[in-house]
Length: 123
Image 1 (cartoon, rainbow, N blue to C red):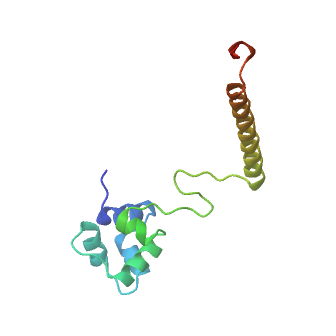
Image 2 (tube, rainbow, N blue to C red; image 1 turned 45 degrees about the horizontal axis):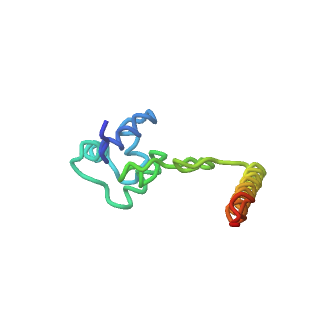
Image 3 (cartoon, rainbow, N blue to C red; image 1 turned 180 degrees about the horizontal axis):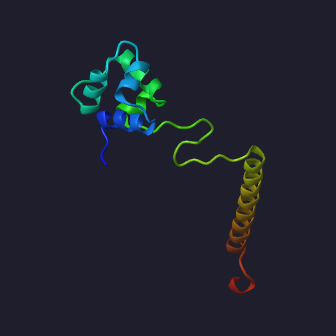
């Protein structure tokens, strides 16, 4: 479903089990009709109403306006993982070991290329 500002308001309200009237009561000087108009896309809230609306819907202004999902506390952004510090250090040490092995093999290969073999010596 292609969500827009109006549909995100309604979705959050319904997900929270609130009526339009209950949501209006959570936002200072807002009526049920105003909520209805926002959900239908007839009008949009002023900035201060938007901030109160986001708080009442337990979400962010970014989600309501742009559809950017709020990141839960201690939850990494999309595409990232949380790793314990000790585990990260262990992985970094392993990467260093592997890099050292690669460098050593490359050095051996370079040595073999630059050192003429007995058969290739000109007579």
